[in-house]
Length: 591
View (cartoon, rainbow, N blue to C red):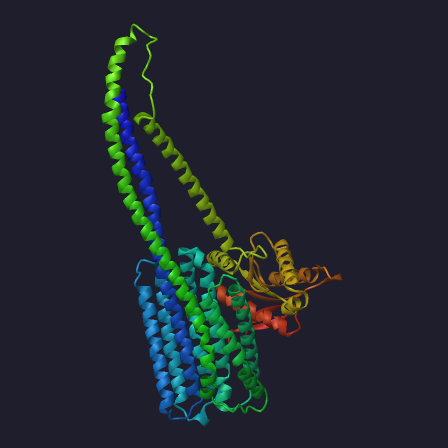
């Protein structure tokens, strides 16, 4: 093969390699554009899901008002209820339309079916409310009012899997937004529990009677969950670089809901525990309570607006970069063709002519000098250009490897609790769902154990957060050391941990929980200011699939209720959730 033909072939290969390289860069940027566009769409879908849940929560305010109102209802009670129901229906239709628009996505299709199921349940709950309201006020039984109230309360949990799926989608498309997405979900959950707290008062206010024991227990549990959510939100919003609008919105919630509304709640509880003379009916209480409670939505909306702005900015950047890559690719290919043409005209042809001249000397003068580059000419420029191209390719590959390593590191960090090193709530849920799927397929039993460190807030207040963190790390280390290969453990949130025992029956699960309780109780925490070590205890709730089925939410709910029962009956103990003989619901057995 002649040198001129070889160099022309080499030039063609260079063009092909450049096109492949440019195509790879363009493909990467195109994927970035699609990912950022998907993140914007996911945030809009999440907003629609949270808005549907919000409208259901808002509807409970006028619903509670009419349940305690006269019969027939006056216009000032009928109109807010009708408007609230219309808003809820529009929000459900909008959410279903957003989800149904992507027919090829099985996850969104499943969420769309869940929305329709929640809408049907909402219609049933509304019918129950209307049936109670149709009766004279004095004839409305407290049980009927409570049933109607909690029928409405049950709707939002039906939407929880939808919002969870949409939040996961937003985090997957844009991992940098994961923390803000989580805070938005926490604020939505805080508003739901705040509304649930108000709903607990409805039956007592409607009848102007003291609380039942069940109502009092529900109020305390709800207030405890509100306190937990407040702590988690404050923890995530306490970073110095938090945008000012979010900080201001949360400060408004702190002032109006937690400070201003506190005396009203305390007064209602005092009256409910006393003679039942509240001085307000259900509608009057809602008029005072709901406006301050709805400030929580401002935090969520501010977060969602920020999320969408960031995702939109990333989409704009990706589109601009894709355009620059495309334009640069065209320019680069054009320059390369021009350069090859110049090489052919100014290098290859002179080389052919020089070779012909050298052939005449080949047989006679072996020592004949060969032409040497006299200066920084075209051939030297080609060599430098090839060397520079190789260097740039190596640099791009190094950056690609570094980026992939960072993505893998971020994915690992997003699944791990930063303090204890255990899987976080989301990672545990993913792993637990996989185990439950295997259990359903192969027919083996599982046991869920939830434990909560006793008096953890008192420990933090007395010894400081450093000691509290030490306690959580020690408990996590003890759990991991005691569990079997194949069992799952994760940090559930705050001072709560959750354990999934695979191939396990209730008796073995209780024994293992009892052993874990003893291990935790025997932990010794060294204190810098005290010669005596500090001991901690934990309360355990146990639920098994044989009694409560292979649905993770149900098992967690039963174990959580059992854990709270362990708290109420003295702490530092294990409680097994058992099904009730009459209703099938879980009852708690102390062990």
